[in-house]
Amino acid sequence: MLRVGALVSGGGTNLQAIMDAIDRDNIDAEVVCVVSSKDGAYALERAKARNIETAVMRKKDYPTSKDYDLALADYFKRRNVDLIVYAGFMLILGEAFVNQFENRMINIHPSLIPSFCGKGFYGLHVHEAVLKAGVKVTGATVHFVTAECDAGPIILQKAVDVLDDDTPETLQKRVMEQAEWVIYPEAVKLFAENKLEIVDGIVKRR
Ligand code: GRF
Image (cartoon, rainbow, N blue to C red; front, side):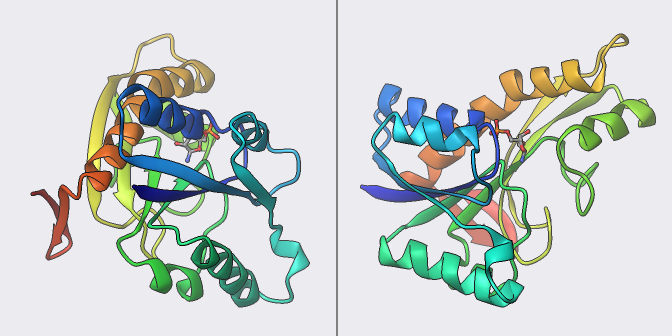
């Protein structure tokens, strides 16, 4: 059984999609703990509704970024987590964290990486930039997390059409429904089944 820990900051719809898929598709995994960077994140309620352990760890309560990274790493290590899913987590963690879970952290980004990603591309900003550029296709990407923002090996991508009358809000909703909530659980399943292998920075299916 794969022990999954989640990092959240907001609504947690991706966390919900993962928890639902674990039950529905009999994925050999269990979300064992959910850590939020913010008080009051609705994702925490979704976890509590399933009796999953939750914690709030706010960066401002730690003297340095490194202290925060180490505290988070310690939290997940104590719970023997095998995989960490970033599910709408709004902070970028440094090497003190990511080096301890190499190839065991995954993230979802609401665009087709390497477009519209990196620092500053989060939330509605991503979809605003997509509409401004006038591209006709966008989507979502699940990737392994490395110290560089949105730059780790790509696991799955799914495309979504951009429509002429889209607003950032309508596009965000469609990308979530058609892509994010589909490919994030799928990536967790592939990881749980040990079907992912990274060869020279590229993800291959075993
Ligand atoms: C999603 O769009 C995700 O791609 C991005 O942040 C948003 C989180 O939404 N990383 P939720 O908290 O999963 O509902």
